[in-house]
Each structure stands twice: as C-alpha cells, then as structure tokens.
Length: 88
Image (tube, rainbow, N blue to C red):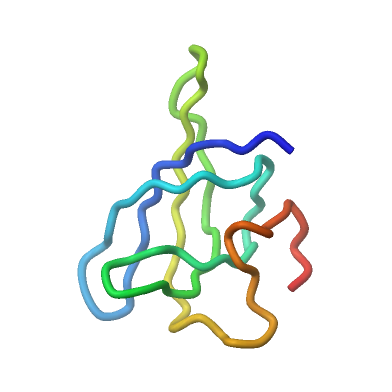
C-alpha cells in the first residue's frame, strides 16, 4: 500500500498545538485513532480533519488530530501497521 506524507497539527490537552510530519497509509478518516510521535514518546490521538494542501504532484496533506492521552498498551494501532479502517 502506498504511504503518504502528512503535515500533522496535534491539539494537545496540556499546552499549545504541536506540529510534526508522519508517513501513513492514504484514506485516513475522521474519528480514526493513531499514535502520534511527540518529544519524549507518543500520544494517542483522534483524527479531526484531513485536508489536501496542494493539487500538484506530489500532493501534500494536512492532518488535524486531537490528543486523547498516552497510548494504550493493548489495542492501540502501531503507526507501521495502521490501515484505513476505523476498527481498533
């Protein structure tokens, strides 16, 4: 499966938003959950919105996500195995 580079804006529960980039599978959907890398580890987050930034090749995407807390040890989706499904 082709992976896409996303510019990520992460709304934090305890401070200002963080910005990072991630390579993920295409077709992320609103409400999907994933682990987002931040300084010092990862946080569990929910996708709020995915926006196409450019129509030129390569297409650039922005991912807006909201922090839900520290990643769960069981049942969380590692980034390298994340798929387009909302099942977790």
